[in-house]
Length: 224
Image (tube, rainbow, N blue to C red; front, side):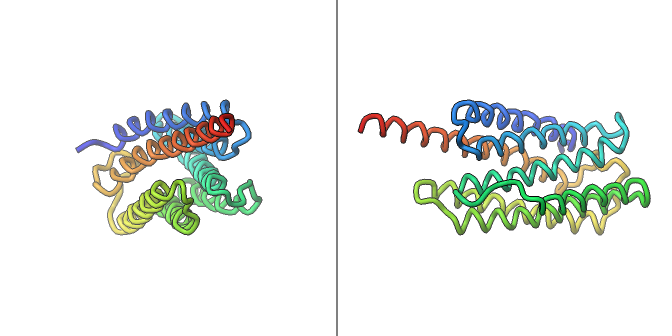
């Protein structure tokens, strides 16, 4: 059985691939904002993963509080990027500070006031369930005719994420976790990182398909 640490390292590569892919398209199509949002998502998520995976090597404030806050900020930019990708209203809104603040304060509370690994996992997992549910509905309800198969698959993949994070929430509530939960070998905690790996690859595929479509349309316009 692979450890979470090994899977986190593996997920680094998929996030870096997404970072490179999104950076390329930000440069190539600077007017398409969703490439930039995906780029920001990958940056925050990569740094968040680096911080959270260096737990016990750096202060808890950076590895636990800041690291997980970066992951939440990244996820919100992913949500904005998906809205932009689907031609919906997409911009930063001050209401996004609410979930960021809740997670930030929650992790401070359950790290320095009442140390509780399970509650930190529950807080982050609930956030992921809520936003994954919204993204699932957005993809399903706003399927584009030219990309319907990709949008349907995206909705299904986010729905799988909802299930994984719900089970993770339940498991964290009923089993005893080590202080450093990264050492756990529980299947449902490990599967989340496998999911992250495949989702990062899937996002790269979405951007490549989208970039190819834009290039094809531009070439078609020149011919006409």
